[in-house]
Structure formats: C-alpha cells, structure tokens
Image (cartoon, rainbow, N blue to C red; front, top):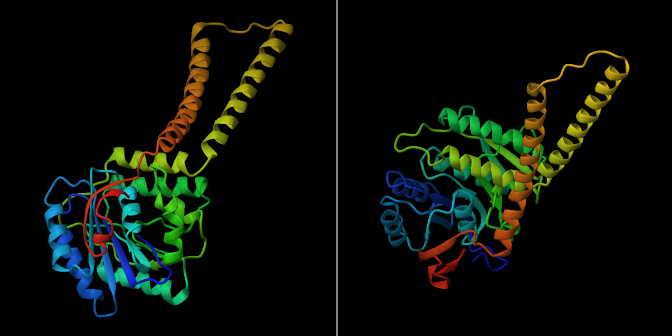
Amino acid sequence: MLTGDKPSVDLSIVVPVYNAEQTIAALTQQLIDVYRHRGPMQIVLVNDGSGDRSHQLCLKMSEKYPDIVSYLRLAKNFGEHNAVMAGLRRTLGAYVVIMDDDLQHRPEDAIRLFEEARAKGFDLVYSYFPRREHNWLRRLGSRFNGWVANFMLDKPKDLYLSSFKCMSRWLVREIVKYRGPYPYVDGLALRCTRNIGRVEVVHQQREVGRSGYTLRKLIGLWGSMFVSFSVMPLRVSTLLGFALIGLSAAGSIWVAIEKLAGRHVPEGWPFLAIITMLFAGAQLLILGIVGEYLGRLYLAINETPQAVVQDAHGLGAAEDRTGDA
C-alpha cells in the first residue's frame, strides 16, 4: 500500500507474529487501549507462517477492530525481517513503530518512541534497554550483531540495533523500495539516514512461550548483514589472500637464506600438512564468500519474493488481498 502523500493515520504499528497465540490478542488490545483516544492509529499484524492458533486470534482482532487492525497472513515462514517488510508496505501512518509479539516491549513505550520521533524530527528512533531479558544465546547474538554492524554498516558505536523502533514515513518509503529476497531492515535504514534518536525503555521478562530466534535464524540474519549490504567480506578475502601470499614469500626467503648459509632446515610432513591445510582453508573460505554473493544475486535475478501474502483482512484489505508482498 503506502500510497498517497498525506498519511491517513498518525501512527502505524507493525508486529511480526510467529507462534504467538498466548500473547498477540493481549498485545493488540493493550496497544488499542493505550493509543486509540490520542488519534487515528493502525496496527499491522503479519503472521509469518505460525503453526499455532495465531491466525485465528489475529483474524478475530481484525474483525473486532476493522478500522484499526490490518492482518496479513504469509503463505509460509519467510523470517522476521521479510515479515516486517510486508507489514511496512501496508502501513498508512506518518510514523511507524516496529515491535515484537511477545509482550517484552511495553505498548506505552511504543507511544514514547513515536512521540520522540515526532517532537524532535528524527527519521529513526531506537529503543535501548538498561537490562535485556533475553536468554544467553540471544544476548550473545545481539552483541555479535552489533559488532558486525559497526564493521560492516558503519553503525554508530553507541547505537543498539533494537527490533523495537520507530521510523518516519519518509524512511519507510525508502526502505520498501528494496525488493531483494534477503532484507535486513536495520541495514536498509542505516544506509538512508543518520538522523537517529534513542529512548530508554523497560525490557520485560518473557512470561509465556519462548523466543522464535534459533541459532540457525541468527546465523541467517548475520549472513544477510554480511553479504547483502556490504562488500566488506570480499575486501577481507582479498586482504587475507595478500597476507597469505606475503607469509609464503617470507617463508620462502627464510628457507633460501638458511640453505645458502649452510644451516639445516627441518623437513617433514607435519609442516607441509599445516601449510597445505592453511592455504586450502583460505581458498575454500574465499570461494564460499564469493559463492554466497553469487547465490544471492542469482535468487534476486530470478525474482525470489521477499514474502507472499496468502490473504489479508481488516483495514485496507479490500485494496489487495493476494499477491507478493
């Protein structure tokens, strides 16, 4: 959607939904109760191939609040960032908040992010937490994610890339221009703007369910950051190649000098095996990185969709019920 120059609501809230039958109805109701008397709003629920009763509950909320809730059901599980992109394309608001479906992000804090962006004219406002109530794997993944983003995306070092954030309509318009099959929302945002604010919020403990982020999904997210929004891995591969060439040259010179000086040079298969494995590993690493770039380029050329919307309900659904997101 995202059509017209004048937003029809003040605030849109995009919630990617995955196996959230225990929280999504409560979250939606809380968002409506907190904001509905402040002005027009929109909630976009995007069901990312859930295997529980999330579809029935999201559908029920869209039927109960057809003038507020937009509900999209994707044909299968495409991943959080793909689901977010599908939701962003259906937003109508002057500002858009993205938040998780697990009630760890408080609805009242979504309003604070929106008000901070509107009052100070930020294109993007991130939340940050004095304490994060994620499990150890998710916390470790977040730290690694931040370190990689500093290196790959030129992210400000003091900025935490939270999934709980608010964006201006202008920034949303720029982000949804991306049609590749491997979106990374923060990478898309950071390549458009540095007009960024921060708001401290409370990260609540998860009371029900468990995180949908597995190690496999975290690795997939890192892969998107590595090779979808930066050529840095290719440059690192080139530097690694030069370093190994330099190491080989230095070793050859050392052997030649030792031989000319008449000194004994130790020989044996362990030394040769280590050198062979070093070079073979470096070659495979470089080939793998290049292959990842080529594979993603191949999928993009073949127009692999970011997400496929199986059906749409609620606000704005009549305009487009089926098709690619």
